[in-house]
Structure formats: C-alpha cells, structure tokens
Amino acid sequence: MEWFASSDYWLARLVFQRGLAAVYLLGFLAAALQFRALIGERGMLPVPRYVARVPFRKSPSAFHAHYSDRFFAAWAWAGALLAAAVLAGAADAVPLGASMAMWAVLWALYLSIVNVGQIWYGFGWETLLLEAGFLAVFLGNARTGPPVLVLWLLRWLLFRVEFGAGLIKLRGDRCWRKLTCLDYHHETQPMPGPLSWFFHHLPRPAHRVEVAANHIAQLVVPFGLFAPQPVATWAGVVVIVTQLWLVASGNFAWLNWITILLAAGAVDAARLPFPTPAAPRFAASPLWFEVTVLTVTALVLALSYRPVRNLLTRRQRMNTSFDPLHLVNSYGAFGSVNRTRREVVIEGTRDAELTEGTVWHEYGFYGKPGEPGRWPRQWAPFHWRLDWMLWFVPLSPAYGRSWFDGFIERLLLNDRDTLRLLRHNPFPDGRPAHVRARLFQYRFTTWRELRETGACWHREHVRDLTPPVRLATPQEPHTRPGR
Image 1 (cartoon, one colour):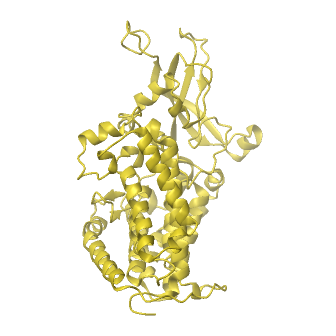
Image 2 (cartoon, helix red, strand yellow):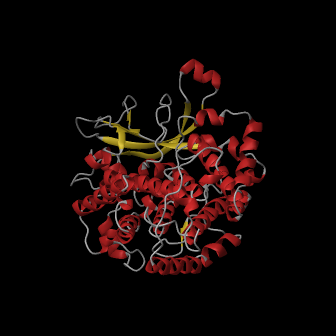
Image 3 (cartoon, helix red, strand yellow):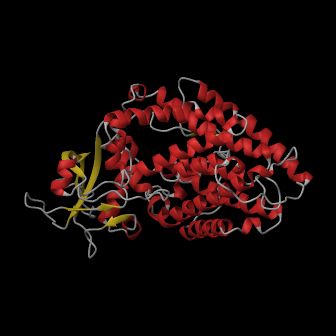
C-alpha cells in the first residue's frame, strides 16, 4: 500500500462503480420514460416555464440554453447509453483520464435533469446519486489503485446518510423514541412492496426490535466506519444487512441501493469469511491525479461545514442541498410517521349528465395502492414519480397545488403521455366526460380478511377531494358542473 492508494479495496471499488452505473442507468431510463407528462413542454410543470423564472446560477442545467422534448429525450437516452457502457466495463478499458471523463459526463447529464426536475426530483435519492456520482469521478479505474482519500469521502457520505436519518428520527416523532413507529410505518409508507403486508403483521415486540435495531444501525454503527479494520468492514456489513431489510419491506427508489454500495466501499475483501479474488497489480498513480484528488478532498471538507452544522442543530433539515451542484448534502427521512393511510382514488365516467346511477371507473397506478385486491409490486430501485407524489396530496393540498389540477385536465383529454404513467386507463377508446378525485382511508387487511377475501387492502371513503370536473367549452369557461 502506497500513501495515496490501497489495493485492499479494489473489489469494493469495482462493486461500487458498477452498482452506481446501474443506478445511473435506471435514473436516466425513468427520466426518459416519464418526463413528457411531468416536465415536458406540455407537462404539468414545464421546464421552459421553470427556466424562465429560475436563473442558471441557482439551478445549473444545460436546459437553460435550450429545451425541447426531443432534446431532453436525446439527453436522457444518451445518459442511459453511457451508463450502460460504464456498467459493462467501458470505464475500466480506457486510460484514466478518459475514465474520469465518462464518470464526469454521467454526473453532468444527471445534474442537468435534477436541476429542472422541480418537485418530481426533490427527494434525497436524487442528491445522493449526484453526490456519490461526483466522488466516483475520482475513484480511478482498473489501471490505478483506489485512492484512500476518496474511499474516506465515501465513508463520510455514508456516515451523513445514516447518522442524519437517525438524528431526524430522534428529534422528530416521539414514536421513534417509544419504539412504536413500525406499528404503523409498514402500512402507511409512500409505496409499500409485496412483503409490506407481512412486515406490518409481525408481532409488536418484533416491531420494537426493528426500531431499536434501526437506531443502533443509524446512530452507533456509522462511527465504526472510521475505525481500523476489521471494525470498519463489519460496520459496513451491518449497514448492508439493515438496508436489505428496508429493501424487502418497501419501495424507496434507489436510496437503499446507493447506501448499500457506499457501505460496500468500506469492506476490505480480505476480512470477509469467504475467499475473494486476489488483488491485481496497479501502476503508480499519476501526479496530476494525486493533485486532483487532494484538491477535491479539500473542496468536499470545506463544503461539509453547512451539512455538519445542520446535523448539530435542533432544527435539522433533511434532504437539503447547500450548493446548486449538490456536492455535499444533508439526508434523512420519516422524521414523522403517519398513523393512518389515506389515498387519492381517481375515477372517470363517460356520462355527460351526472345522476345517482352514474357508473364511475377507477384509474390504476403502477406503484400506489388502488384496488383493494391488487397486491403491491416491487418496483424499487425503479421509481414512479407520479405515484410517489400522489402519496403526499392527502397530507396537505399544498403538495399538489402546482400540478394536481393539470393532472386531472390531462386525464380528461386522454393525454397519451400522462396515460403512459398509469397502469390502467378505463377509457381506451375515447375521453371521459367527467373525472373526480376521492379520498379513501386504507388499511392492510387482517389474516382472517385476507383468507376470506383474498384482498390485502380494506378501504373506506372519507370525502371527495375534487368534485366531478369536465373540460370547459368556449361557452362555458368553468369546468365544474352546475356553473
């Protein structure tokens, strides 16, 4: 081991970089497949309107210079192709400078998307991908040993992810301190997975153990990442195991998977209880590369001041970027936990005149709960952005104020791009005459109800969220019936 690089972590670097390339690939695919309805020229929150009011210095993006749906699609698909190439090993088959350029282009491509993505891209896994992707630029490739300083920066990022999430829980909902939050969370989380029903029905003492183990994993274990080996390796293994538990219990996009990859970066393959391939021989690191890594390390440490101050304050903010390039950020989730689950159910009808006998048909979504008999699917690490945002609408009208009416209007138009985000369109042969949004309270069925009905959900109508609306006509500027 030379002072700059360590061959002990070559396998950890390989796992981290290939895994991160896979996440990039999913991120670009999700952008390419979903952007038109969300942020396209005729989307709910169009990029041209956003860049017209937000200056480049606050949200750096190539789309400030030019935007069209065709250009955005080409941008996202180019990112997907480059990510696939890196995943296949292209960055290890070229000289070090070219490899760094490939990783830098991936980061810049995704940064441009995130910085115009608005609320659809306002979650911690977006900034986590960007921060991890920035550090990946300086990890080197198969021709050089993994830089020790960058490996430590990866641990520093993992520490902030885990410790920040632990602190936000202790400072937030008292159910985390009482060890009772998981009595509710598996049922009320934004997008349950196929095993969430079973996690919810674990005995209550098991839920207490889950919460206590979570506190240990997020508030104690992260300090072990900075300890000598083999402590750091076992700290990384603990994080990996706890994150896999979260993967099994719900859908959280690629948040858990990047955390797993970061934890893998702390693992010394020689410390594992099973044989691993021998480390290859690396050439000495070029001087320019060493200088670059030293400079980046100093930059990250300087930019860490505000995230550290945020960790130490009682008014800790979660999932916050402190610079427009998202280089060093704060993380955390679920400082509060809902006790009940409310879902927006969207329905339409072809009846031009509404009566008590009007038959309404429900729209189906890929990720969010809908029909009581439809079992949740495993989508993560792929991310359905509309489904996720619809979880927030029942919590407060503010979450949907900027886009929800536009979503309803696009359903009335049978907008092709919007319907591509839905699993089921009940009006494939023509537009609905009216659409409405209703609020239902959902709960997981009991074991007995599951045996009797086969349904995993039970739901009850709470109130109408949006009364029936129809498209306006030139003679009738308002869309609501009776006006």
